[in-house]
Length: 364
Image 1 (cartoon, one colour):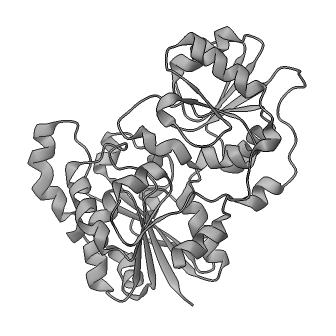
Image 2 (cartoon, helix red, strand yellow):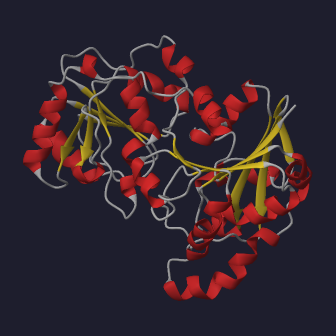
């Protein structure tokens, strides 16, 4: 049996299901032994009230937890990790210490690292482990799956420097958007692989969660960079339209036509997407947010053939996306009306990967 270690910032049993969860699931179903390693978690995470602390990460810290046959979860909890200290002076001062992150004890996972056939690194501070893992296991295949632009995530400068240094050493650099692709242009092992989708889950029958109405239901699913001003203006412009917001988002406008559900388990979000009329990719601006043009949610919305509303700085060749200028009432109104009138049967889904198909691409 072949073995793969996925090095990510996500926790295996999190309600938030990211691409790395689905990659792990696909590899496991294809007969791999899977070690899902959660990194970039430390006492600094406690100070910053990291959402992962809501899960039993302390109880499971630095232990190999078997979650299924040939499936393991490992939470690598360390005294500190390379975190952006929100100060140029403190970031500069901490560089020397943070560069030694890869020297901290690996604990029970080290034996798995030495014998793995494949490593898949996500874009997190755990990139600092690359050279150590390469030293421990030089014959394995190393893949960098760049889920996010590290600049958007505001990583510590030492993480950005490490990415630049080691990216050429990976056997494959796999990116999910054209924007991120341009960041690595020139690498011969660079490939554009859009996010996959769990087609079996989306193919299941679900009960329509929306009350019967002739007015459209609009859906946003996400946990960050939400354009609250858009929601305020759009809900005023169309008081008979219903806006549904799923995710741990606070300080939303309080209106009768806005419903906030908080964070839901992934599968519980599917019927809200499948039965919606319009999807919202309404992200507020932050440097690097352009990398979200082909986010996992955009792929899911597209697969369900939903017209999408997006700010103009997330421009895409997709013809079912309608753009607004943030803060501009007229463009918001035009985008929403255009999306409402769009013929969704035109939306093409043939080129969307399943996660199994994406794994095949990563394995070459």
